[in-house]
Length: 444
Image (cartoon, rainbow, N blue to C red; front, side, top):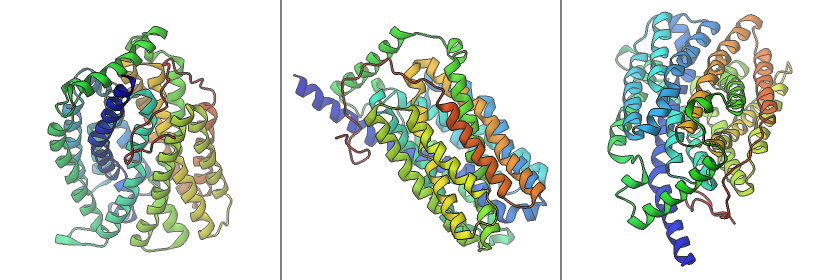
């Protein structure tokens, strides 16, 4: 009997992984390509629009002003209403507004459109994380989130290749950076329409699962929910007053301040240090993305294997911090600068899937959804401040050493605050299994 249950469990987890993870991975690739394309566009856009470094940083930051408004309600909507419908709405609207970015002609238009892109994309990320908790057990969650999160560095690779080509074109009298926004606004509209038919909100609604498979995953997730409620059954408002949630908000805010301060300026960093062409710079930005994909998967797998979260979240931040602080030393030659930049930017990604598996250890259902939204919402202060601060420091000093020191300090503080968080799971886990290969590696 136990052998039969284990076989049903393995088959169910395999089917869920193959059904959901590739699609949400592709959705997030499209999301992050559209979020980061402004970094590549900036190689030509700022000159065309008359933007200084500080003004460009402000425009990047306006995305996060809009983004913060719907984070919490959007995550709760996914939990209580429908991930399928809400994700479709988000992707279609942000795709349309991304296309509008290709038609801006003044700094004020740039600020407004960036604000609207953030407003339309708000709650996409926490909504997907909430959706994954409807399908994956705690023992599989860091790997599931890790697989989803590899879309982030993968988007750097895909975006680099696409940008390297588009920045060279000049169709219909329009500069390549404009076509970058126009053409990259189409895929989210397509994915949004497909999501309406492809995504499933809950296992009980999944016609692609057999009755016994549906019963197995439902009973597993219900048991975890009961275990967490037995320790502490809190409401949404109680979750939002939980000190641990606020500690995580601080960690994520500092991490975004450093991480996005680097992301939106990385092509400019490389351009100033190397003097290479736009297309070559775009290709070089691929390398941190490749390393980031590896770091994300390996750290998520190892965290699940050891059942440890705090150190697995903090160590990548400390490593990335050390790289950026070394970059702040004046006079570093470009080959060494690029190695440190690649290592710091790539390993940074490894902390993210582990970090986002932690709230579901502490909270459940709407409370967990609200905590995702709160953490991501508060942290957008860092998302706004980081790129703007880097632009300000670049304008003020005329070189990148101060910006690298700022980024490294933010990541160091994020790792240090992470170490203050005590992470213990109320869920008793006797199984040492994992999401099946080939999507995710088997645990030995």
